[in-house]
Amino acid sequence: MRWLMRFLKFAVFLIVVLFFFLQAEGKIDINFKELFNFFDEDEYTSQFIYMAERGTEKVAYEKNSQSEAYPASLTKIMTTIVALEHIDDLATVAPVNLDTYREMVAANASMAGFYSGESVTYRDLLYGTILNSGGEAANSLAIHAGGSVENFVKMMNDKAAEIGMKNTHFTNPEGLHDKNQFTTAVDMAKLVDYALDNNNFRAIFTKREFQTTFTADHPQGVLLKSTVLTSLDNSNQNGFQIIGGKSGTTYEAGQCWATLGMIGDREYITIVMGAPLKNISNPDYAQRKDTLKLFAEAGKK
Image (tube, rainbow, N blue to C red; front, side):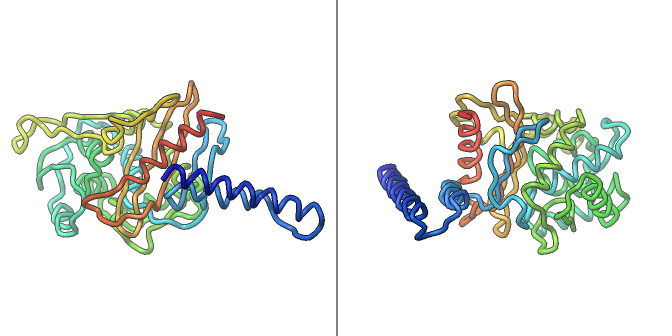
């Protein structure tokens, strides 16, 4: 396979040289920037990509970054930051909501592992929402912080407008597919950048594991693990380190990752969305491959 890629790149080089001479002689007019972007984009499986240095907003790479995409469970990033901004004490008990728990089970949503009615805290729900992408945790946050799911979704959309997410609309707090719930890679990067200014969000987003409160249902608590950071255990991260993230996966949205990484002393936010998904029970993790390559390439610059 590697020899084929080398051959194709060499063929592209010859074509570009040919076009250059034809253009020099006035026989053809071509936008070379668009040509290079076309071939460069083929190197990544994800359909929508945006990577920028945090603080300077210097773009390291983008592909269809302002095109509409489904966010899947990246939605829970907004759920978490909105909830955090309406919680006074993270240690307050906030039981898992019965009705939305049943809805998430019926919809086969990803779950953190809590039981219906379990007397967990806000902190438990927040970590369960980001690390394990728990649908029951996200909806319980919505109920407690917003009074109802419907009102909380309005709060999510108000926050999106406030921080300049111009091409984003939410319809639920957990990220299950809805044709009217959409975003862009650029908007999602704005959200992550905004949320990271909140110290509690940053702690959750960059946590690898978290042990929840001991309850009658779980006397030893529930061990939550980041779906992003644990997935990177055997990955080569020479020259960079991915220190936090959130995953999202549906057939319609594909495989999505939002990550925070370090290259030297610089922070980068990377959004990859729309990596095709053939079998949700046996994913190929194309979004992980794209993310690692993006960081590796950015580290060379």
